[in-house]
Length: 412
Ligand SMILES: Cc1ncc(COP(=O)(O)O)c(C=O)c1O
Image (cartoon, rainbow, N blue to C red):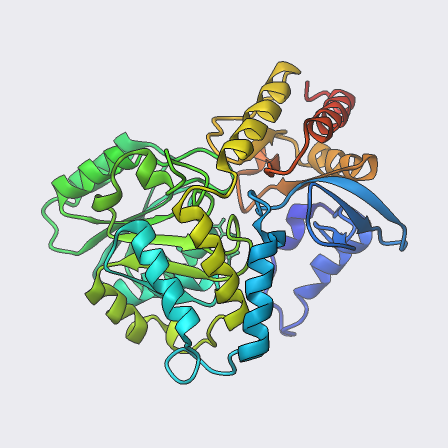
């Protein structure tokens, strides 16, 4: 039984028959994390963190699997603001935004996000996944055309499917192929939306937003960018992938997640006043889903205060990214075309990937494991996410362990 086997489930007379496959895979031991694919944390996420194994043993690992790139989850000002809000509003809202789920704290956050992107308004969603689902399915429907990069996040594909629009997909970052699709559609009256990740979550590279905007304008399409992993990291002052390419004013829908750099949960869409107003009434994951807790929104206001002035430690993060990437390349790893805090190590063999991932964890380094359906099986990889507070000593130790493991499995 292989990992991939459980992904193909069969419909039988019994609805739950399909659960057997996964159960067999899990009991075969192929999922090598201490918790399925992942791990159980014993303390707050930091560059070195204690985790618990299945047998109850606890040990430290160097954390290369967290998206809290700037370590803002543990920032004192952020946590203090959150505690003050919990005292004032309690720990949850108890209602969707359209009923009783909004406070001044939420409105301040929406304003800060809109200002950050220099847009008229921004809508806050209770989850990042729900942001993509809600925005896409509210704006697109049958008869419209959505054009996706093949490496877009799953939530973009799910939102696209849910919308009922016609779906076109171009190979990852292949602008020629995108142009071909648009050229074929040039006589169609259908409304068109090009959607791309800013920073691609499984590759760490960045969409060619200047060329995408040129094509969109020429062929009359709108552009939506999900910059979940670009916020606070990419661009001259950390305003993301659109800033890197100088196309901030040309993006129609700036989607981002509050779960990565911002370290909490939630998502947003920064856009025009009218589109934001429309989303608040037609995006079902907004309208029918309980609002972000006020303590989270309060912490996020502090985070945006830091990001607005580029004072969240982006430069230190980039030193770490470049340091660790150069070291990995020097020892011979293929890290693809990473341009962000995400560094893939291409393995290309699922059996080796799982074994290597487990060896790494047991030797004291935690990384993410990425295979189908997130990427093609032959491109399966270990994904490293770099944090600002990682010390050079920790980075050196991590690379030493990764190199030793890579040699053992013939990757380098
Ligand atoms: C590019 C991208 N979009 C959307 C999401 C979903 O965000 P969240 O985890 O906050 O729901 C993620 C994270 O998994 C992501 O990487």
